[in-house]
Amino acid sequence: MTANLQPLIDQIRRYTSGDGTHLTPLKSMSFFTRSKPSTCDANIYKPSLIVTLQGEKQLHIFGETCVFKPGDCLITAVDMPMLSNMVKATKEEPYVCVIFELDTDAAADLITEMDIPTASPPDKTSPAVSITSVSDDILDIIKRSLSLLDNPRDIPVLYPMLERELIYRLLTSEQGSRLKHSCVLDSSSHKISRAIKYLNQNYRETIRVEELAELVNMSVSSMHSHFKAVTTLTPLQYQKQLRLQEARRLIVRTSDVSSSAYQVGYESASQFSRDYSRLFGLPPSQDKMRQQQEYQ
Image (cartoon, rainbow, N blue to C red; front, top):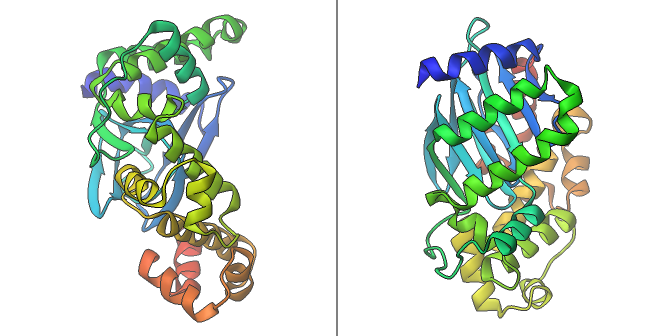
């Protein structure tokens, strides 16, 4: 596997400089690199396929810690707040991953067009995130996508076909069950996807679970159980994580602790500090110093 990955790593490093996310002319494809370990990082993972090619990263999801190592791919079917930290990354051998953001509307169209079976719903305990070994088919799509970067005139014609092939491969894989059901209109997973989208857009507001359930045409009990099956969080726990992640971004980059707390919807600064410390392991002011030191 390592030998298969090295040509991809070498090519990606030609198109990246410094740490962080690197956009490409391929609209749904980007790279992420980091040259040193990190402590807690928080992000919203959109529906996507992420393949680690070099280095190692720990993901803290569903109350467990998973190591994301070379040759592993992460598939997310809905927007998910997750914590992570880099455990293996150096200047000589940085952490390198390739990210494909998935177009769920295109996936829904493909399910209908190709008549891809969706009759059996996923296990209720099956989360919207899975980690598995990357397949040869996916590696081949990455290789062909990278080759387009050297031939930009081919991108408008060939890359849409590669995007479509990637989605097809995922939908027909063993890990495609949750992705399929999150795209099928009127399925419970699709309704939860709508609820998640609403929370992402309105996390600053006071939201009643009854109103959220009515919005997606589900009973409160049904929405609660399905929401937790998909995300392992209740809707209000999910909203809290969105608030805390946005507050963290504000604190580190622009604002003081109190104003950040109020901007994301907290009414009590002391409650905000307790929730923040519980999620990130340090009080807001100390976490700000830690992150600033990491990125110097």
